[in-house]
Amino acid sequence: MIALVQEIGWQTIRFVDHLGRLGVFAAQIGRAIVRPPYRLRVLIRATFDIGVLSLIIICVCGTAVGMVLSLQGYNTLVRFGAEESLGAVVGLSLVRELGPVLTALLTTGRAGSATAAEIGTMVATEQLDGLRMMSVDPIDLVVTPKTLAMILAMPLLSALFIVFGLLGGYVVGVGLMGIDGGTYLSSLQAAVGFQDDIAGSLLKALVFGVLVGLIATYRGYTAAPTSEGVSAATTSTVVVASVSVLIFDYVITALWGV
Amino acid sequence: MSRSPLRDLLVGLFVLAGLGAIAYLSISVGGLSYGGPGGLTIYAVFDQTGGLKPRAPVVISGVKVGQVASITLDENFRARAALDLDKSLRLPTDTSASIVTSGILGDRYVSLQLGGDEQVLQNGDEIAFTESAVILERLIGKLIHNSGVEK
Image (tube, rainbow over all chains, first blue to last red):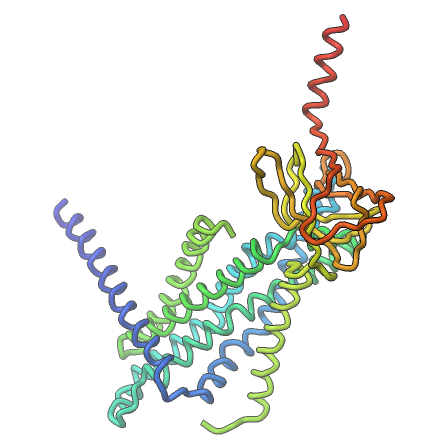
């Protein structure tokens, strides 16, 4: 019984400890962002790895999600004779929920895991120690560009996901189900507002970008310098980032109603 | 880190495509600015808005000419709707506004019927003649009540 309470206590301490270290880590990254040198070339390279290489999966998944939403929505709405609202259903679900959340989950799997593995391997092969010996701060050169690239890429990827989703929804709704194209678009435009929906969607994507970027780099940076350490860091990046994205999604929706 | 023209180009394209998607969502889908010139604000006071919402369209003969900017309570506890309309519209002062529904249970919107007066409404003017929304439940209630009295 005491052992159980002890275990709970130990896990709590570990959790708070991680949270504190993550806070310090985030503060170091924040300082590296505002303080010169600004490593623009490295940032572009990181944006290529994280953003451009995630494009295909984002576009394909966006289209597929839009298509299935349209199909499901149509089959439900047609029972109530309300298939004109299909644009609103597809649009609101994509903009408010599915766009930012699925983009964050896909990017976690595609780019977050790679980031953690890359930094973890650098830890295991003592490359970061090498940098420190040359008095180059690894946070400044390695970690910050990757985190920043994730924060910048997430809203852009999310917006692309939503646009491709709307396109997929249009193809199925108008092409397959025979809804009038103008009806789809006008119901979409009437339902989705900038302040209520689009701004909230971008805010969500930005928060998710910060979350995934921080967790991936933190897990890689603090990985144990062994091959097991790198694999554990990669796994826990995907798990922790996915769970916190979903939890923060609820919190943001509850607080700001987007 | 050396320059790589192809990589830089792809990153640039990615950023532009993303910004383009955000712009499309904001302006075209989100209606950040109503897709036509606004700038003429006219007020209309209603007894009952019946679920009229901001951003609902304002139409003349079924053609969209603006949208409802905001709905507030005035000092007499009536609903005061600000209508953001096309600046080039020259509406006679005896124009009337009514809240109507598309279909039986559809969305509410404001319809303007033009009068014949020579003077035109200026920015910030108030429409004198308004017709409130018809509440279906109240109509049914009246109908039941009336038929009960007749018996």
